[in-house]
Amino acid sequence: MIIAVDGPAASGKGTIARALAAHYGLPHLDTGLLYRAVGLNLLQTGGDPESEFAALRACDISQIDFADPELKSETVGGLASRISAYPTVRNALLERQRTFASQPGGAVLDGRDIGTVIAPQAEAKLFVTASPEVRAQRRLAELTRLGLNVHYEDVLADIHARDARDRNREAAPLRPAEDAFLLDTSEMSADEAIAAALAAVESPL
Image (tube, rainbow, N blue to C red; front, top):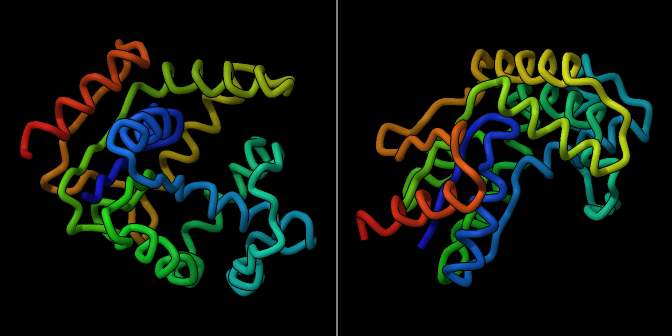
């Protein structure tokens, strides 16, 4: 079974995807980390994020440590959002994601275009969202736990900027698949959101 979990930044899709993967005993891929890895590689090599060619060269992420806390930084997140708009970058990472999705037994993938581009054949598709203000509070809490000194107003502005880039890019814009279950987690605890997601996955089965 393939489960596609899409949605904007800090909507709760990662938490939900990990819980679904644990529940069904499926491997999980946070596809956003791939773009963050490219962003980190670009940063470490001094590449220009305004250059699509430089971003494409940074797609060789074989040397990136996915446990590096820098992957979660706002700087790298901003770079990931910018370079993810390049069609060549998306194409470079496309096969890796599709291969993960099509492994025997299935998988859970979360990102921005899983249900629309990476795995449109997924048996279950969720589109997880929340208000920008709630997402900014969640992101602020996450960054604070990582020991980063950030301010709510800056995080909210970044959320709005990422939303605009994700929704307006030409290559695989952020949007729900036509057959996706819409899950607004604004007023939900993590446990409530996971329970709602499980119910949504089970309903068509």
